[in-house]
Amino acid sequence: MLFLAVTAGFFVENQREHFIEHKREKQFIVSMIKELEGDTIRLHGIMRDSVRIKGINDLLDLIYTDNGKITDVREAYYLLHRYAMGVNFIDFSSNTLSQLKNAGNMRLIRDRNAVDSFNRMDNLIKLIERQQNNFLEALFNTHEYATTIFNGKYFRENGRPIISETIREKEEPPVLMTNDPAILITFANKVNIQAGRLILYHISLRRYDGFVTRLISYLKKEYHIE
Image (cartoon, rainbow, N blue to C red):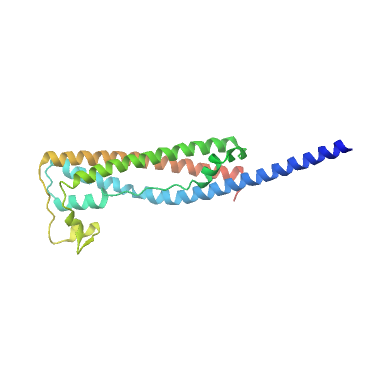
């Protein structure tokens, strides 16, 4: 009888632990889905910023077409200010993924496909973050070189930064600090590198978006989450 009582007690305790672990597993999955859905909303907003790529290409065409002789200086200032001086990046929500990785909680996820997907998602995020850093490096190089060509005073008015459209509306036409074709072509080459890295970044964003959309659908189905 004592043996049966001990065995029964062990079985009940084991079942209780399994119940708690399964509950925690679903909590992690629910939290993961919420974070991914939030990331998806932000991601779609950033992907709409792909119009920046076209603006940068317009700036390149303006310089390359005339072999370094910019005929429409006002438009060059506008395109630089509007499209080539910034970027929108995504800041991933990775609290749940970090908890799964760093606290040994990944063992709670019984679905191996889900585990594999989380690992792949982690790799995609790291790739995108590296591409963001690569783009920033190109952006800073472009900005530094641009100071030898474009006069920053045309980006300000009454002591404050202006919006890009103001450049097109100002009565005073902006002037380049140099018209040396070699310098302008070198600048365009730097912008071209910046554009290439931005294109790669957006390709990865679209790839990540498709992957996450499929993952959310899979998790909701497998874990019966509405």
